[in-house]
Amino acid sequence: MSDRTYAILGTGALGGFYGAKLQKAGLDVHFLLKSDYEQVSKYGLVVESKDGDFTLPQVHAYDDVEKMPQCDVVVVALKTTQNHLLPKLLPPVVKNDGVVLVLQNGLAIEEDIAQIVGNVRVIGGLCFLCSNKVGPGKIHHLDYGHITLSEYAPNYSPMGNTDRMQQIANDFTNAGIQMELVEDLLLARWKKLVWNIPYNGLSVILNATTDELMADTYTRKLVEELMYEVAAGAKSYGRIIPDSFISTMLDYTVKMKPYRTSMKIDYDEHRPLEVEAIFGNPLRKAQAAGVNLSQISCVYHQLKFLDARGR
Image (tube, rainbow, N blue to C red; front, side):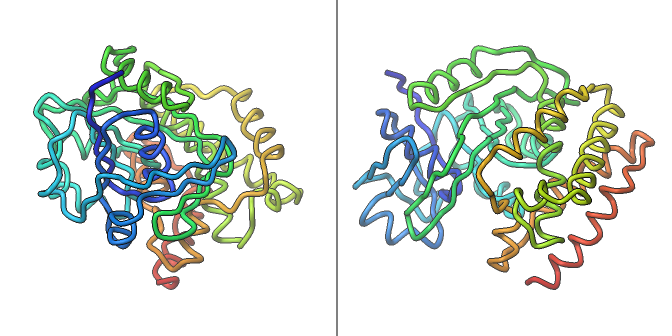
């Protein structure tokens, strides 16, 4: 059994699910909470999952990082709209030789975090998870759950598979989470955007679920065009996303359960949207490399309008 300690910053649909699975597997996990703190410190966490429901009647719950112990692995599971808080949240809770595991959507997140934590290793994790928080301390896991891990290095130079990645992957695998280790974090991040950009963006703009976007000829075409534009963005950084990957993503979405994307849920709940991390950062990165992603830019500007109006 691993004696690594884990801190979960952001105990929502994602952080709550993975953190609960790690604790259930016997690991020492510490949860930072905001609105759910009272409920979870008294009654623990409840997970309803397609892999089997379970309850953790007692968890280490905190409403302040200063009260948390320093941990070996600090999991950043907040929405990127909260990342302005990380300079305050990370330093007290991560050990000097620790790891920050970034389970967030978007591009260029690790760069910012590496500047906050200095000598601490940063690992990016891309989660393929359908999960919702359905009440205080209550998580409903609908589908998927696997994580792709890759270590960050300055300028996103590929790091290969490191021991640290392998150790963390082992902990998650023992907790019943399927893991994949990849050598190139930047390529992995652009590949994730192939799905996130069209479906998150269009679900909000067009008020549609994934199945509705795929059932209509016009929106399906638009999804595909946006995917190819993401691939053009990746190519501007020397990362090649093959056409076959795009076909796979389209097929995979046709087969998946009708899904209201995380951005659509945030929009419906009048929460800030992750527009900058998922759309703004890739646009700016591609622009810096001399590539204009005009369709993504069009989606980005509409989302900025809806985000401001929705709140």
